[in-house]
Length: 220
Image (cartoon, rainbow, N blue to C red):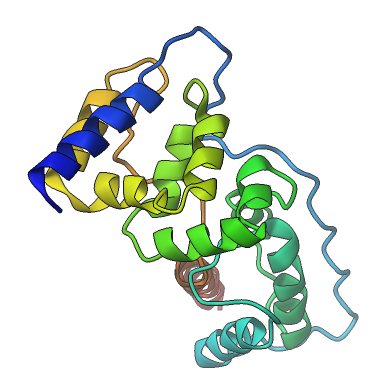
């Protein structure tokens, strides 16, 4: 990326993101509340918890069978609720289900809706390859005019380069540090608590499995 292009991106991003009003801002660190599914009642004959490799296989097959899905796509609560039912039917009732679902975007929230449009899908699959790409969108979202900026990024042919600049260059990191000092940009370069992708969800479920089953073994 040329020095002139970097300078242009830096100035453009600053113009877009530096707070210019006192509009109400949401907290990027707290995912919005959303009704969660009821747990299927346990049967009288409780199944044995499957081994971890079987759980991992169930998760992998769940995503493999999803029509139109590509690894790295943004996950939402509605997409993942059935996975918990499959795990429960296999013998593992995930005790941390509600906490995990709270960390996923709701199907109807702004970011999920924007990234499900034709242009949004193209944009999503660009930024999903960038370290912290989704996190940056959530940080931008809570800043003044954040929704407008995200729409502009999605609908502009080179809009993804803004996120690329923020996540992969020294100038982008410095910009994030600067924005972190603003009222609504706190922690701009840091991850949010959200779970965005299959890889992240698989890691969280593996940790939950190991934690829950370690407790079960200690009680024996």
